[in-house]
Image 1 (cartoon, one colour):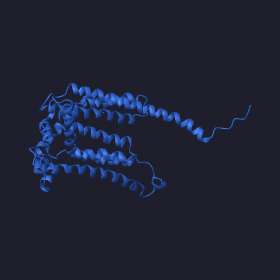
Image 2 (cartoon, helix red, strand yellow):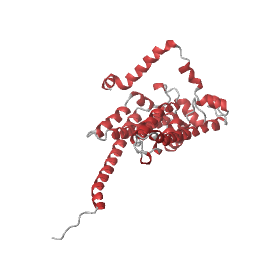
Image 3 (cartoon, helix red, strand yellow):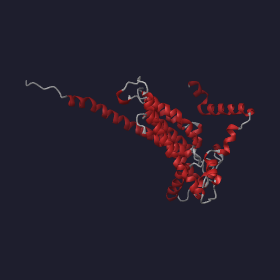
Image 4 (cartoon, one colour):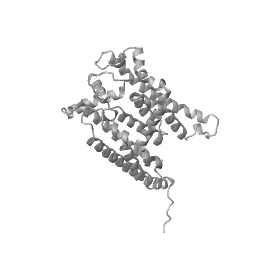
Length: 322
């Protein structure tokens, strides 16, 4: 028999990596299908329980004002929600062409349903990554996403015209970017920028997100081992730069506020076409007293309200499991 030459390193490498790459692509495709499935399930659940019109249910007293501000191109209550206003105006225009006879408030609630449902799919992708070494990871991730989808607070906000369903979607995207792709820093810019432009409480999560990204970036700089002095701090600089860019881009969307306020629309909180009015609006000065000027006698009642909220969301059984 003629002597068979040994396989070249390149061929040997291809033979071992190609199946793995194919398996990874197949797994990613399956995960995409499952994520779309849980999102669709949540969307139809919200669709069939959508508020038919203006309602004060589920703390939804702002729905009428938000939709009105979008229609008249106005400035809603602090901090002005520029991202939500942009999206709601575009959404009402598109749905107005597709469903011209549909109630305006119902169409605003439909946007909430879509955002809430998308947050369920993103939650699945994040949980699936965290459970990637678990043999039943796909099942547990799907159950986690669906549990999030039917949690009382999300369900309530996904069926009314409000800013919080979009808020949950952006929070889910921040979790996906920081936990699944901490090595791809540019993935973080988009949820940070959009989250800051939607609701300023988003800023409260950024220190934790920063720490997660910084701690998971394992590639040493310039070939230095991690225990070299200054390596960890040098690795912090690009992370800080990316988060700074996100904050900068998000703050730029607030330019909408003075531009719109200058036209004196019917809904014009703060008359924010000047610096004092603008700062009053975006800093939430109207609500600051609820946090910093609350009497000591209300502390226990607030703690009780927080405890009730947590128990209602997770249920006693969920709290016991946690």
